[in-house]
Every structure is written in structure tokens, then in C-alpha cells.
Length: 250
Length: 250
Image (spheres, rainbow over the protein chains, first blue to last red):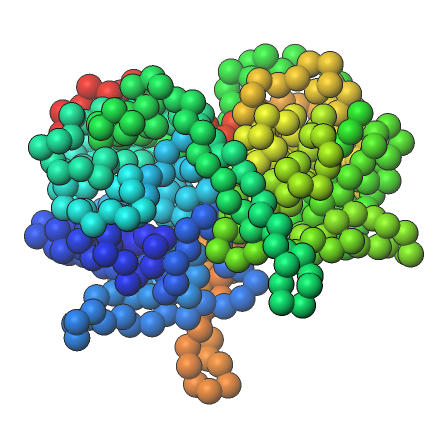
């Protein structure tokens, strides 16, 4: 099995390191990850400027390829240029912080998996639900199990899995549930500040307002200490609305 | 009616200018658009650096607010900070070049409309199907008609419209059809080059491989000289796959 690993926290993060160590026990692993943190980069790709690829070493050993672009760039570059043949699976993570509900729209981690799905490669995005997480072993173990599952029962073209794992010891996790994307979203605040020259600037802050209580949503599942696995597709057509408006006269 | 206008080509583009001129005949229009071109920025938002807001003038007259961020930033900033009360509708465009099929994933134009939908505001993304388009009047007219329609028959929360208009005179357009997102995607190529110092770099190029022939897809419609209107939602759950995998044992 050949696995391409990427992320959005950057190639030097702890989450990707634990993921790679775990996956190496079952697969031939290639790492292509952003040189710098790319959180909240959404599904941006780099077209107006060129990309560089750097060989990246950890503790004196070759770890992978660092690209000075976005997570989606890394997956494109990994599959098109760096790997000789496409991987069986792309895994993006392990992200430090949850990627549920509306956050899946902004997330670079999720976008890397979506890009793989666009390229007809099975894919998983994986996150641990705390920005200060230090325990990634259980999330890595789930990726290993899911990698085997996707090899034997591949998802339909264009679909990928978004996995969120509570920041808990395995024994404290209540179980694994399959879920739908929630509707929870941010209450955005732009903090107005002044620079040293007296000019205004604005800094985005805010809080995720959790409206998803249903246990069959990604946000609801992790709030109840379950691992959440959500299937996503790059097609975001609202089919119900299509049936409603297709006879509109304008 | 109050309309917030944004785009991804930048506040100085021709498409946004024609859109604003047209909408001013029916609405109170506020422009909040990127200072610089933001094509292919996907749904990126700016969190790690602050944003600046600049008053932008065209031909000596105040045109709108330029933000040194992404299209999604502009919509957040416009609704949260610049407008005193939220707009009835957000319209993003008119984009120079189509936003169909997989391009809706990468598009900043579409992301601005998606951001509005997340914020519970009715929204339209609009594009003319040529990068060298110079005729935006018909696309602007369609936006005017759709704005009235959305006021009287609002879409469900989280849904927005993605409109693609052939680069033709109105008389040569065959009609308006409601569509689903297509599956056409890019055949990516990374051109390898060397900088003046002998170091390699890579530049993304490629061709959109059109696989959508069905006239009820966005790409199929514009290929046949129809205006395409596709409803999208920020929820990208693959509900069919959910029903298949919800009983998986892993």
C-alpha cells in the first residue's frame, strides 16, 4: 500500500509526525506537506506564482518534501510530480484542532483530502479536537484501520472521509460514529486596532457557536466524546433546492 | 433593497464595475472587494495577519471599500463591520471566466457567495465564461432579475446560486437553465523551470477536461450556450455514501 501524507499545520508539526510513524508500519509513505502553516487556507491553489519543493529532514533523517504552497498544492504536486505512480490513499493530518461543521469549508486539512478525491484517489482528513492536543496515537490508529477499509471497499469517485477524534485517551472515547456535516458556525468579531503609525487595522477573532446537538452530526458526535467520520464530496450542489427551483421563471 | 457586492478579480476589474452600475438602478449598493486579484483562493480566510480597509475611488468618485484579503474576508468584513445592517443579498462577480464543475471548489467568486450563505444572507456568484470577456451587461441584468426573485422567494439557509453566463450577446444565448455542478476537472501540469540562480521551480498549468455533456450540468449548459444557474450549499456531506457506510465496522 502506498500512502501520500499531507496536512495544513506544516511539515514540522507533531500531528503529521505521529501519523507518518504509524502509517510506516503498514505502507510505503510519501510526505508532501506545506513548508509553513496553512490553516484556514480553504481550497486555495497557487497559480500566479511558482512553487518550490524542498527536501525536509527531521532528526537528521529524510522526512518528506516541503512545498511553499497550500495543502491542495501539496496533494497536486505529490501525485503529479513527486510520486512515480499515484498513491492508493491520501491522508491529511493529523490536524491540531477539530474540523467540523462550517470549519470544513475553511480547513486546509479537509481541502487536501478533497483535492485527492477530485484526482480519483481515496482520501481521509483527520483531526484531533484540541489545538493544544499532544496525543495523536489513537487518531493515527483509526487512520490505519480506515486505510485498510478503503483499500477493500473504496468510496465512490469524488468522495472522501473527514475524521474528528476527541482529544482523549482511547479508553475514554465512547465509540466511532458515522455522521453528517453540522451547521455550527462562527460568531465573527473583527477587533479594531491601531498600528504604531496610528492607522487602523482589523483582526478576525470569534467563537464557534455550537448549534449541532444531534449525535449523527460531526460536531454533535465529538461533543459527546465519539469519533466522528463524515463522508464528503466535492460536489456541493443542493439537490433538494434544485428540484424546487428548476421550474422557476425569471 | 440593500446589496453587498464583492468579487475575486479585485475591486478594479471591469466585471464588478458593470455589475455595480446595473444594481444601483434597483438597490442601495455597498462594494467590499479585494484590493488585489484573488482568483483560485478558494474559501481561504485571513486569521494569522490583520486586514486593512481602504476607501477606493474610480474616476474621482467613491466606488467602495478595498480589503487586502480574500473574497470570503470581504464578505465577512462587509457584513460584520462596514454595513450598518446586513444586506438583503450578496452578489459576487461578475467574474472574468467560468466557474463551473470542479472550478467552484477553487473559485474565490463562489466562496464569497458561500460565505454569505453561511452568514444567512441570500447570495449569488456570477461569471461570464471567458477570461477575455468584455460584455457583462447581460450577466448584470440576470443578477437584477435574480435579486428580485430571491427577495420574494428566498432560498433555504446555507444555499446560494452559482450563475454562469455565456460570453455572447443576449440574442445569441439559447435560454436559462437550472443545473447541477458538473464533474469536469483539470489535467494539471507542473512546468519545471529554473530561476536565474539555477534552482528549480514549478508552475501550475493545465487544461479543463470537459466530461460533462448533460445539459442539466453547469458545464454542459454553458457549452451549449445556455445560462446556467446552480444551487449550492456549504454542506458538502455525501448523503448517499453516508447511508452506505453508516453500518461499516472498522
